[in-house]
Length: 576
Ligand code: SAH
Ligand code: SF4
Ligand code: F3S
Image 1: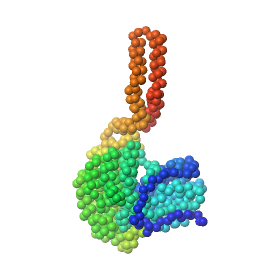
Image 2 (image 1 turned 90 degrees about the vertical axis):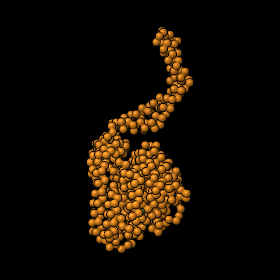
Image 3 (image 1 turned 180 degrees about the vertical axis):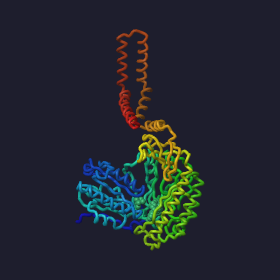
Image 4 (image 1 turned 135 degrees about the vertical axis):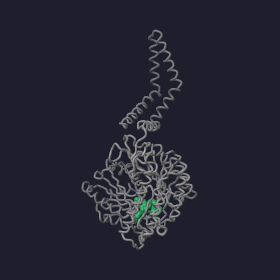
């Protein structure tokens, strides 16, 4: 047998499968003693490329590794196991990966048992796994987006056989629940609501790399969000390649508007969602967004092109007129809404007129942010087979014109923010200056302002003073100590030891035996102040005090009091 075990390899024809019915599987999270022993003291490092779906996969992979005793490092050279989580959406994204794989040769040199895993969307493309195993001798594992929950088994197999293990399934994909997770942020969380995509836009690889569109059961999503709210998260982003389609694959299932409302009602301070497709953006969705103040008034609505001819060739299912009508409806239903978009320049045979159509849409919408891309042919997608007559030079020239126009609109919109007040969720001190805090407004505008680091994770009021196009400068309007004190109060009130403490105090004040002892003690103490004490009275007082102190409720209280004191010490430390 060779050095590589190909358990499964991707197959684009199977990746198109939209017929099979995915199952919901609950992971039992059972791992062998072997891997738990192996993991002890070993460090893992994960590098993620691509979109939020990949970031969430990183959190899940980290969850699995932590359960097996591995610990996390953010320093690649320290890693005993490294995983590169790849993206395939454009060619540029792929080139970076090859360089990165190369850098881990140093780890292998230092440590012959070093494990390098490569996973993610790029692995779902035909030929990539074979190319990687041939080119790089230090890769230990290759697995696909449908094989994340197999991570630990694959690692174990590699350790035991010393073979390179390749497992990349091309399938509709199942829905795995009870996934472990180690979140990268303590205040902002992403929650998958659906996987895959059925839209098959002709330029896009995602429907092939991520499989059939499949919605998670609503109760599982609610439970996950509820747990996040209870543990103090401030912002949840509901994730799906196309959130509007949520529930369409569940017979009589809830739709996205219903799900969004259920999550908004859980009381998370900020709720976002990504991405919504202009084709099936329902009025119900719009009503829910308008109704709940905790649903952020910021909608990412990828237009891709403003030319009807190109939109048709892209398979986007709307015309520029329909898109603009939706934008108008959104802007009238949700005053002050921020709109962001994705635009592709240079789709095969895009004419100057087609491109001007895109500029016209930008002019009409005046986006608050636009992610602009030059079309990149993806092998296996219908658009990649179209003969293209547009030169790379023309594409770049159009791209530059587009970003210039987008920037003008961003500046124009941002100028209107100057002098106004906004709530900002603080991400923490900025990378450049530790005295400057950085965070985002409800409309996803980045704001930098002076403030103490302990405000990380708090929502504060900020007045905008300067516009730097893609970020703003502001002034903190709140008293930071008061903000933090209020914040701590809500955290403290939820702490189990504080709840237990308050409950015990309540029981103690209502307990009949204790009440009786207390009143007798008080009476004796009063008598002692007025009359001479006899030994008998003093002994009785001692006996009563001992009885009181040895009561189970009082003993319990002293234990809980210690826990509360420790909690206070931690909090004070946090403020310093
Ligand atoms: N599901 C989301 C995100 C898809 S990928 C959506 O539908 O919006 C993110 C963006 O990458 C897309 O919106 C598109 O603008 C861009 N993109 C996808 N395929 C591309 C390609 N082949 N070349 C250039 N950009 C592409
Ligand atoms: Fe790709 Fe279109 Fe699906 Fe978005 S909706 S992931 S662009 S196929
Ligand atoms: Fe990239 Fe896959 Fe996301 S191709 S954009 S990581 S779904």
